[in-house]
Image (cartoon, rainbow, N blue to C red; front, side, top):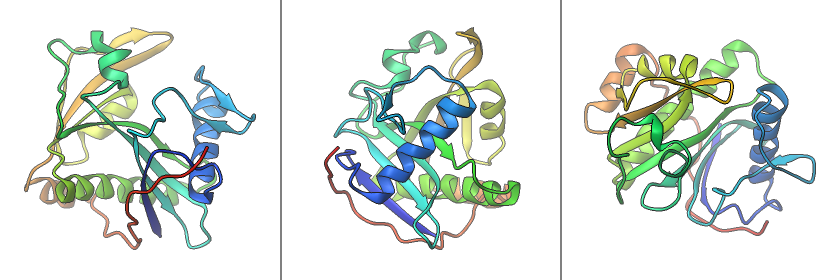
Length: 207
């Protein structure tokens, strides 16, 4: 597997970005029926896909999208702080070392075993990226069934408030602490997966 970490989706000309945005459209719009904007009838992008966003993209040996996630700085506009603050009982965690995980996307065109492997490798990549770059906390908004899975991954994760029924979905806000115990926890539950991928640096591309 190859991983492509980049900033700012300036690149629908970039194959990794194109495959990620296309997969997001297939999952979040076609499958889950979320009401989101579509570009050129093929790609899902929203107002948070800005030069401030970072992306982890897992590709197979043929360059096809397997899994991806978007990371948003929490001292700038982000989903939990701007759209869903009512999900948190207290102040929304934010700051220069806090990122919000959004658009955690597993490609639809995989077997159940492939999806599990891609999920675990993406979780591992998120943890290792945080430890490598000084990220201390992740936040996020998830449907409750997915949130229940995240709680069992083995990292320190807790709800920020009670689940709320909103727009036909039950949503929960979460807080993940990243420290030197994180990888141990992921290994204990079997979620940790060594990454057979290459991590590229930050770069920019043109949409």
